Length: 286
Image (cartoon, rainbow, N blue to C red; front, top):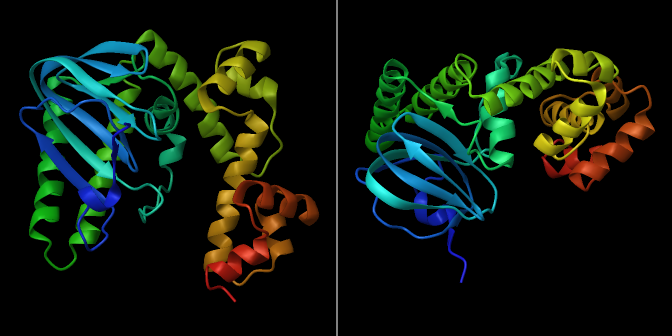
């Protein structure tokens, strides 16, 4: 029977969506999947990491993200030590600000989780690993003591971890990591120009690929086309505006780059399952 790690079994009863699980050493655990995302930092030892039919070696300094329902496990462990930062992406109240302009953010947190991270994985040097583990110690202490304001402090520390890892990804990537960074650069461009029409030739040039190769690699890495990716980002922004402003649906549609409010409504329903007005009502927006 498939083993699924449940949110209620691993997170604090108060519902805060971040938890640190330190394994020193990691004991045999068997194949499992999660109802949450998991940022894994290997701090010592080595092992074989298995996802489905794929497997690869892990050593100290390796960092990757596990999302979705795919099973994974560690085999052939030799003094394996690691830190898992468990988090619920949909519950985190994080302002990314300009972080999506960093290609390494998309490579590590958008692209890598959607594919077996055997080749493109981030590897930290000793200085970077020490810096990240110091932040993890601070995060773990906030979550353990839970003083007033711990949620703010823990979230801020987790954001620092994400930011530093995103920067580190681009410094010395593997060959496959460089390919992910090129797609990450294209995603960053789409983020910065979300209100403009998708220009495939420009995106392919940014990724240093032919148009045909870019479309193939982009589809493989993200599971969708650049146009559909952009529409998804626009709809995500619309959701925030529907929750946090009183703007009319038509006004929001034009604000996020649509020139036809009916087309916007169709795309919004396709992605969220409800119309913009229904979404606002469900969010308590009246």
